[in-house]
Length: 286
Image 1 (cartoon, rainbow, N blue to C red):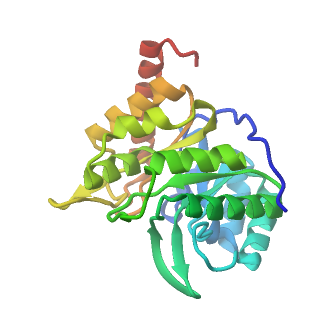
Image 2: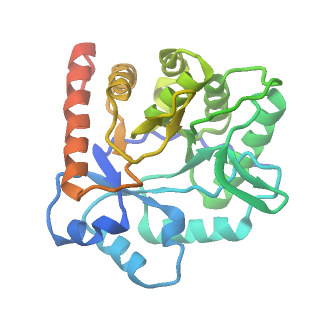
């Protein structure tokens, strides 16, 4: 038996970037133009040392969010209780605005794929994920947010589109949605659907956060790389999302070929300006 957690209202944090080792010194050195930081949960599930010291000092100055890659909410393996214990302890120590992970599976039978793998979108899979989200939220004592992952293959047995599956998981569990705009665009190109249809199908009150990132065009498909600036088509889709959802915490992801921190600030400021324009166009209050 799992507890039903009503989905809380989450106030927007503004515009943030990922907290990466390359930028530790710069972030701690002085003021930034960043409103908040997203920390990869697994990077700070340690007993001591520099990472925890840095996160402690960052948390004294900024709101943070914990974002994980190992929950494997769609796997048929049992939930990792030790992992959840460590995540709960980390959250208790740093009081993040929320905890997020991905709507995917990362391994089965005790073997890890080290990738975010898509689910079959069926009623059976939906019931499975809903039950596991409920148990995770019970364990953590709080709602989590789930992110749509980019994908390159689908399942013939799927009976609903990804956006319907994600929206229904959120509705049944009270979990929030981390809507990755780049991932929507990548998957739309790879699978041939309209990315605006995805955005239009997501409940307005369920979205807690946006991700923005770059991808690479491989000719036959787009590859989610997070290794360069946000491309124009993703900016356009972000504007569409802002017009629908209003002010939502927005994060720039840049995880490889990481530039100087000032370049990330520029990208975050571009998101801030674009969002303000989109809200004015839509008549949405800030």
